[in-house]
Image 1 (cartoon, rainbow, N blue to C red):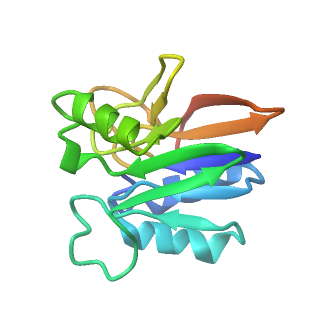
Image 2 (cartoon, rainbow, N blue to C red; image 1 turned 120 degrees about the vertical axis):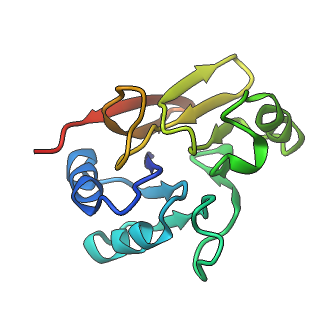
Length: 161
């Protein structure tokens, strides 16, 4: 199973489209918020199922949900934008929420900074910002590949022309 993950597109549809082209065929996509409209755009350029989450700038959006709990490829995922868990300060509250939900994978955005850590209990990933990076980071997205009961995650830099 191949899962595409993006966050914080902030209206940069050129970057969203390029990320979709670069990631190739995926089984499912997760957009972690900021902007729901960009996640809806994904539906017009791909036939892939898309989970749409709301970010802090999406409070008035009709589409999307605040969080996602699902099983993908045999792994329990918990995904959210992250702002309600204070991820700009630290990841403790988010990690504890994932433990309470028995998640094996936690996906979040909001910081615009790519991050992956696997402590052997939970894999945490922030794909960075596909549309409005900060701190000198490039635009980026995440890919998660699940094969033979193993999960591998990576952040892929995106270079817009």
